[in-house]
Amino acid sequence: MYLRCAGTLWLAVIFVSGLHAADSAENGFNETLVGNLEQSAPEASQAESLSDTPKQVSEERWLKSEPLKKIPFGEDGWLNIGGSYRARYHDENNIRPGSTGGLSGLDDTFWLHQTRFWAEGQWNPRIGFRVGMIDAASAGEVYPSRAREVNRLDLYQAHANIVLHEGVGKLTARLGRQEIRYGSARLMMAPGWANRRRTHDGARFIYESDDWEVNSFWVRPAIRDSSSFTTFDESNPNQQLYGIFSTYKGMEHDQLDLYWLAYDLRNIGSGARYDTLASRYVGESNDWLYEIEGGVQLGDNPDRTNHVAGFATCGLGRKLTGFSWKPELWVYYDWASGDDTVGNGFHHYVPRAHYYLGFMDLFGRRNLEDINIRLTAKPTSKLTVLAWCHFFSLANGNDVPYNLNMKPYAGLEAGTAGSQTLGTELDTMITYDVSAQTQLRFGYSYFWAGKFYDTTPGVPTNADASFLYSHVSYQF
Image 1 (cartoon, rainbow, N blue to C red):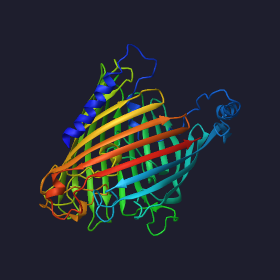
Image 2: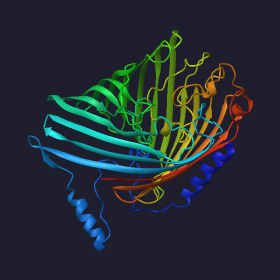
Image 3: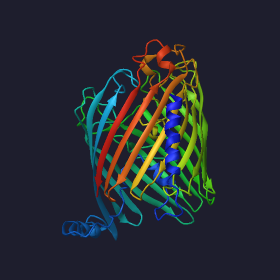
Image 4: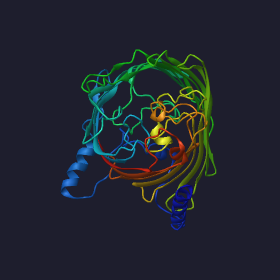
């Protein structure tokens, strides 16, 4: 299976190499675009020019006039009104969660629909706000929906931004319901992939200067009422996240993140607490790209023992600027510690797991090693293609794999793993931006099950798995 994945990527590299051209008028691929592959088009995007037909000229004039943007509001302020709709089709083979998660032996085919409306603005130069509503629905599922798939008509953003001080630096308070993303988002993220977007209630204090941005925060996750999808989300009184996330921006091409993140959980048995002290260094030099992130995690395990864990990510990339499609190639190593006791390994908090650890969402960032290769390219300014191959294995052979919710796969116990080789996942994706408002996406992923599934008693299946999906999204 390793040869299959490596061969596929090698053919992709040869294909891109065959497109070598002296110069190209297309824009080069950049890190920002790679980071946004999981997202729909940005909320603040501007309309692109449309072809000169009578119907489209009318639409173009309406878009360029932007009647719902920069509306006079408050004391010399402004108001933007926006919205989006996304329909996504899923054909999942052997990965419906059931009672086990991961490889489950269950198949399903269905549609996910997400509708959002938001308003943001400034009352005056010191007071701003954002309010957003969401309706996340599913149609055609045979099995119960995942927690991230359905949430009918809910308030997912409602916060005020208040400038407390402005001088050499600027200090802003953000109070209320808000989405959070810090740094690489490996530990803190409101992922765009999820149909039901993740949000938190609390406070952030953001200090910005020429060289630094420092965020101190305290939030509680907003939880869905599983008994009624139409009940408004409320803060979870048994969980809280807090800490300090700082970014040094004073270097020309590089960036340094330093952070402490704390996570208190009091709704699982006797509770647990995790404090992560970590850093990240990312940058580029002469078309070489690099990223290093890692840290130590201390605290209390659910069984009241001392928690000592860690994670590390190392990546080296290269912009192949001599090729017309401006491809970008990365090689990464990801590690998150396990433990001889099930449940005591690294905890990944509320991460962007879908993007970093495979689009099939088979594994959470605990007791996991992942060597992965990512190739991206832009044949045109509107079209982005991606191929990403992961080689997964257990970090600790006495521990087990974990799902995205940090539960042990299939309820397995310590010492039951027959092999540490989990398998290989190949993710392919094509994204086409029809306009600044409309996006199409198609993807196919395949997982070759490794020896772990053949040799471990209690797993529901040792068959391979696949995932076919597509989406269309529109926003204004």
